[in-house]
Length: 330
Ligand code: UDP
Image: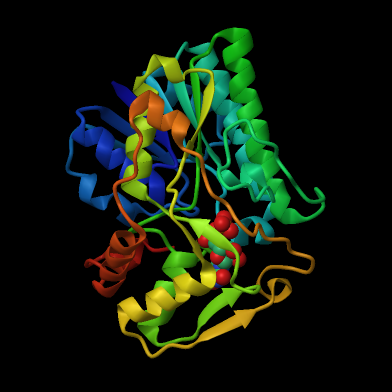
């Protein structure tokens, strides 16, 4: 297949591109390098089946031209990371909503197939034991910036679903739960790269709130395998799938585990949410996926445990950056 990956130089995008190339596809990425980095895909540049286009998802003519030439579109270009959304809410909303609209309009125009990446933020404050795809969304006020991300992704899902329902466009939606692994940076708030970096530098690990809030972490290669298998399966069209890992851990326990695994002398500090994000910030206390749907349809079953993931992230942060990498770092 000829495949377009929007946001292909990002953390998840670059791992997806690697897998698609390994499986024999020809891959073009579109990335504006706002959070994506060329160094994430530099090792793929010598592959003749791989092409990089630096440009914006809001550039309608460019997106039109690129989608016309491919068979499949994986749409990952988005503003991600709670910290980034809170800091730059207007641009984040535009990128997430208008960007997806432009992709869907062109997928429809040229009769292509698209996978839309959504998020577990969709469920908001629903703390159920196992969040199922059709469970309720419990959100705070739309004036609390955090919830605008959830809402922008819900609009993307609705658009993708309606294009399938009304226009028969083959769309697949995946909701990614806290995805982690090498190449993820802590710049935009993601907890594991931040804790690992703090532990390796001997700085205090910054646990927000009480630290009793929990998350389940999915290894990025497990995530992208799930995405590709769902894209290949016609029965996934017009549907939404959770992709996540069931093992749950509190942020306090995560911080302790990282300190122990890195043999760091770091301490742990607790920082109130108001200081960490913004006045009135609301977090979700728990977010556990039910992955039965993807598991039944495509055998989705995360292989990596949290310890495996942490070992890899610690190793990758310990390794010095390759020569020339700093020039590309933004
Ligand atoms: N968090 C933390 N310290 C940090 C960064 C994040 O305690 O330095 C917490 C954050 O408040 C949340 C959890 O870790 O409860 C996961 O945050 P992340 O931004 O990785 O993902 P989220 O689940 O919020 O999308």
